[in-house]
Image (cartoon, rainbow, N blue to C red; front, side):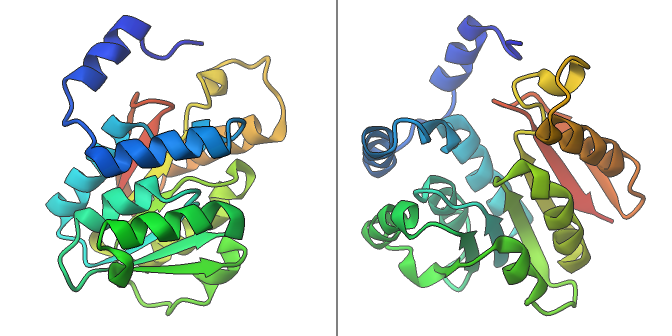
Length: 215
């Protein structure tokens, strides 16, 4: 299912702040190095959305679940103050070796801490107190409910969580798709909408982004 008409999509991209040369190079290198996985990288309008929301929230403490080659982490870190801290969670040294190079080039390496381990273990190792300002989840879909619960418990009041790919190419609304990722995402989307700890809005941005704010 095409969530947004391709002509409208092109128009949206053309009328969002353009990526700078560093982000363009990162996108190109990712596409060349990992052609089968390159679609996991956020688009430049979603990256701009991440930067803007980080700034609007005034985020100093953030977590990213699913770093890939570092595009989204750069966008988040750019929206943070000089003393901000972004914890980036991933399981691949191969993907994140590119991320590390671009963090250095962007002058953001001091703001980003990378942990190579299953993200659920990293999240559960964090202090239980609600201290996070912002979180971005863009990783394996069947684990989203686990990530969600661990992150929401650690968000401060007014903190924001973004869930990527909540529409799964529109297949979450088609009962013909019964594989686990679709079933899991449907259950999570229902759970978020009914979670009285938060308020949320689902946006048709790229593959669907839900913005969740802790009450």
